[in-house]
Amino acid sequence: MNRSIQAAGALRGEVQIPGDKSISHRAVMFGALADGVTQASHFLMSADCLSTISCFEKMGIRVDVDREKDTVTVHGKGLHGLSRPDELLYTGNSGTTTRLISGILAGQSFDSILSGDASICRRPMNRVIVPLTRMGARIVSEKENGCCPLHISGGNLHGIEYDSPVASAQVKSCVLLAGLYADGLTCVTEPALSRDHTERMLAGFGASIDSQKTESGWKASILPHPVLSGRQIVVPGDISSAAYFIAAALIVPGSEVLIRNVGINPTRAGILKVVRDMGGRLELLNESSQGGEPVADLLVQSSSLHGTVIRGEMIPTLIDELPVCAVLAAFAEGCTVIRDAAELKVKESDRIQAMTQALSSMGCDITATEDGMIIEGGRTLHGAEIDSFSDHRIAMSLAVAGLNAEGTTQILNAECVDISYPQFFEDLHTLFS
Image (cartoon, rainbow, N blue to C red; front, side, top):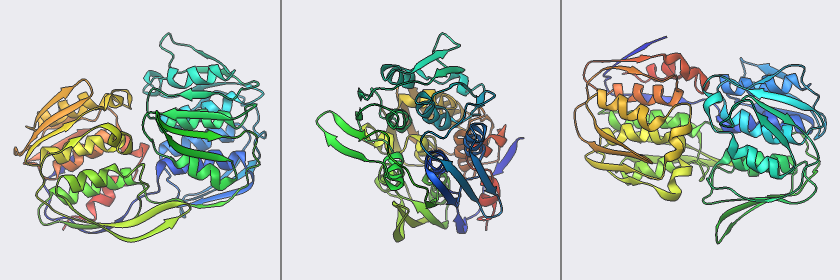
């Protein structure tokens, strides 16, 4: 499916974005390992999250899905209640499902095979294979590069202290989940603090988990064999999805958009700092806490933006939003530099090359670097036919760019937005004045 985007008049109104993808994944996973029932409302009914549900159903977990109410009910069987799957566990396009579930499978008493779509089978899995192997798991990749499919043989795991070379919530969470089944304390140190939904949610389920800053970074620790208890979870709106509406309101003249009930967890909220650093008008309203996660409404108004530098410890807090940050930079005056973001190369696509190629075709002065991009903003962009590379974040970012470009922007394979935001184009259309 292709989508045509044309320059929009002022965007006006309010939008309630879908539930947070990261939290929705974890609600199913942790609920399955808990005793009793876990109910998650405002759950994200996207392809990625449905892949997580499918995997746990194949391991004997009953999950009731109410699409009309965006609610899932997980009937947990406790830490040792999973059953051997009769077939391959297919994770679709979801890196979160693949890496986190690897940690859980490493602690089981059965063997399993884990794989996903073509994109997943290209994404690096050695980053979780290495620590899990150190803990005593047996993991064999069918490919020389350590990618999926993975054959995972569960066993007796040992607690370890692992220094992760990258700040990655997926790596950290994978090791901590394996630590639930270990014979002692498991610790993960990362060079910068990545998103901490796992630590917050596992603590809410009853795990003994701790996070603290150290001389070498941030250290998360977990004690093994807790008794997890089912709970009620209200999933906040996904700030990664909100980012597209933030950017659209900022760059389309005369716009004012209210985005309701967005999670503003500090480990995820780097986009808010970038917007303010670029001179964007964004106000937090009705701040509160929801299930241990901070939330707020975001009021965003069109703004005259200027270039900035995005680097260092900011990167883990907005890694998924960097493509749309590149769009903001294209419409800002001056130069924007994105550094320390080599992780973008191993997402659903090589997002550095994808955004450089797409924005260049629209007339932007953008240069790819080894670990980011340099964007000279202020040029008038024009519509173009653009390859989404079947990457949901590329497709949505370029749809935003097309709202303030001359002519028509054609986005190829736009159905990939179903991975994280199936209603994206419909919700965007409601704001057209």
